[in-house]
Every structure is written in C-alpha cells, then in structure tokens.
Image (cartoon, rainbow, N blue to C red; front, side):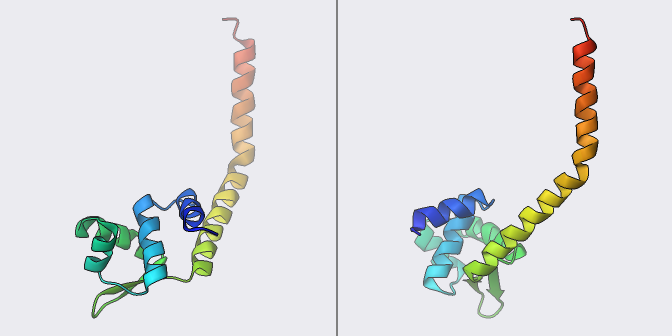
Length: 116
C-alpha cells in the first residue's frame, strides 16, 4: 500500500491527520525526539506533543523516558487496537439495538397517528 492509502486508513480509523503523519514518520524513521518530529513535519513542538500524548494513550506510540524519544508501535498492533475498538462499538450497538428499535417504532407509530 502507498503512504497515501495507509494515511487515509489511519484517519478513517479515527486518528487526526497530524497523528497519522507522526505515526507514519516514526514508523519510517525510528525513535525520534519531539524537536526532530516537529521540524520534519513543520509543526510546533506543542502541537506535536499533544498528538504524541494522544498516540501514547492509545499505545500507538511509545515513550522512552531518557532521553525522551518516541517510537511507533508495530503496524499490526495498531490495526489490532482499532479492531478491538470496532468490536466494542459493535457490541454496544447490539446491546442497545432492541431498545432503540422499540423507541423508533413508537415514534413512527406516533407520526402515522398524528393527522398533521
């Protein structure tokens, strides 16, 4: 797959454009410090830091404390993270499905009985 297709896939899965850029940069270049990431992506340190924090919380990027370097998780683990999230979302929808359908049918019935 091309860079653009992987980038698009990551953003479709819920990463911001900056987060996807950072992940792909780290995956390609290996462990980096904030300054080098910021310079390579032409972003401010604070913007990169916020994105790295989000990626770290999702365990898509790992932090080495000293010296402070950031590295990308293996792509297979990133896909697994998104797969698990999708399964949890689907489970939540399935659990609420019958209640939501009852409400929907009641609402439709009220519309049909309303002579407006």
